[in-house]
Amino acid sequence: MTSELTHLEVAGRRIACRLRSGCGPALVFLPGYASDMEGNKALALDAYAERNGLGLLRFDYSGTGSSGGRFEDGTLEFWLGESLAALDDLTEGRVVLIGSSMGGWLALHLALLRPDRVQAVVGIAAAPDFTDWGFADRDIAERQGISRAFWESGQRLRLLGGEIAIDCPVRLIHGELDKDVPLDVAFRTMRALRSADVQLNLLKGGSHRLSEPHEIDAILRTVAALLEPAL
Image 1 (tube, rainbow, N blue to C red):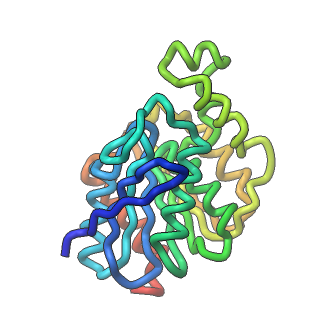
Image 2: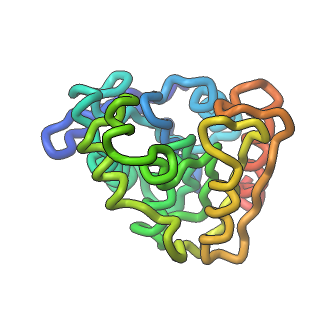
Image 3: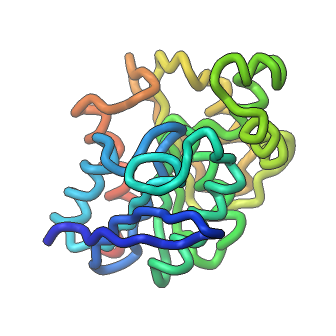
């Protein structure tokens, strides 16, 4: 059965979602910045969910993929609100959040906002606070294509300055040669998380995308291990 295409209205923005029904805990995939729900990792997770009879939700932030709106109008706060609405309105029970790059940042916020529903978090080259460490200042961010509104919203949603009060299992998967998200960010994230069950899996030779077949296999094995009691 193919995943069902549906739309969700969030503050006047039309968000495209694909929902696959199945047993729980459902998987929820959050794409990276300027990415969408049809990328290699999202499709591999969808195929994995189909093989195992699992529920899976994937969606496009406003201004990306099949969703309405202009990309340049997007902010991290808008996209977090859309992610929260999709989680609340389209899933039930426990979920495993799987966030790629910026999606990993959003996944951490969702785990903070819905601790009773999030069973585990998987961050794939997770990039929390990238508006902070990725650019020297707002003007440089704007010159590199990040809008002022997005940069400012990102600064308001920073997490790495203190403890991240998440207690569920967290798995961070990071490429050794990631030039977009320094390894230091993965270590900072691991140390900031309050959970005692946090693992960082470093993939030799991996870049930021982590879309090679053996890298996707590593992601799927990580998800499977978190789901093992349910499968």
